[in-house]
Image 1 (cartoon, rainbow, N blue to C red):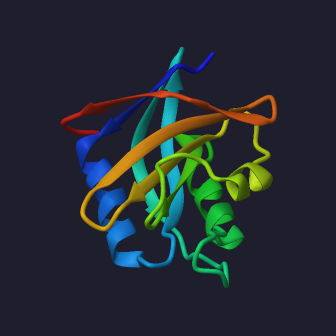
Image 2: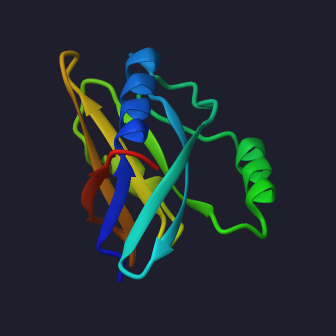
Length: 141
């Protein structure tokens, strides 16, 4: 069972920067990494276009998702999850996120901000619900 996610500080800063730049819309992207027993390790973030017409929703471009799947095929890393922001919101999955989630074992990073500061939460989708993960940071990927 997945318990934690190791997120390098540079990647956390990237999510926070993307969230600020996209505000008041949501930013979104895919998480590249690998699993090592009960821990997942994020190694890169891949920003994607938000195709949603609503400022408080996100929709990852399927063409970008497929391109990245092909690019990573056969390598040590894979797409292990997605990330998005909640401008003026909480760093946890929303009701809309729960409605749109379907990939078992997929990791979700949510960056919530209040304009002055931001917080990142990590979750895994299992058995039809989100479960919080311990989020550990490292100096580098």
